[in-house]
Image 1 (spheres, rainbow, N blue to C red):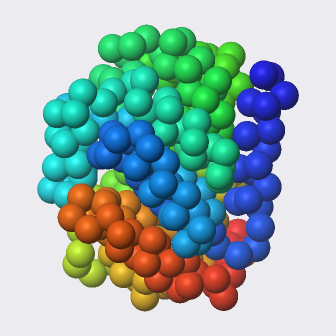
Image 2: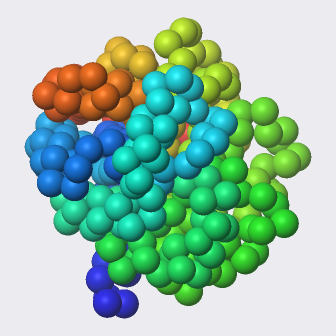
Image 3: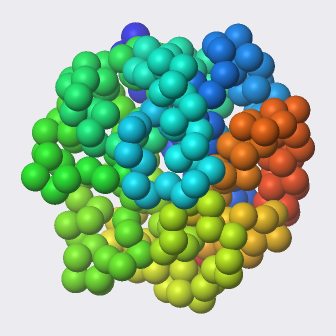
Length: 269
């Protein structure tokens, strides 16, 4: 099992080390019954997803906009929680490198050691806790490290340069640089020059890959962000399709994958 866990993290590292920007697709666990969910993951992988970010349902997803909040509520109404998420991760990880996206309250409710062990056994490469409290960071990183998981970190755009060393401490796998300061699902403009400056600061603060999401609402916008990062992660466009017309979700992912395929990262120092 230890070899399998290490292999999952190595596959993620290898993927993000490639010169072309990769496509990550966020899929919230629990929107559909297990068999249907697995079929959706299969189709998204075939449509061009290079990695999966599997959302662990949470009662108060305060960083998320209306579409993903609605998806969380639907998953929880179905009674889907930790065990269902682990099964979704297990299937996703057979297809592509997979990272779990979680809120701290859900992790702490089930205990970090139990959560990390379960997701590691399911084949996850890592778990990103998007609102990790500073006073719990050491406990979390210890639990994840013991399970062989990487611990990606979301670094808020308002983080001052002086605060970056603390913000990236303990991070592994990737640093997540939100493209927008709004909630997920933002469909307005994105300040690309400001994002470029922020990703440059992150590369100076830590030598691990950088991914971006939040507000990357169209393939054209994804193509503009792609030269700055190792991967673009899309969530709301796919989740919206999975909520309303699941058969369209692969086409949504494919449109973003096509926009990224010829795009190579800038080497910023």
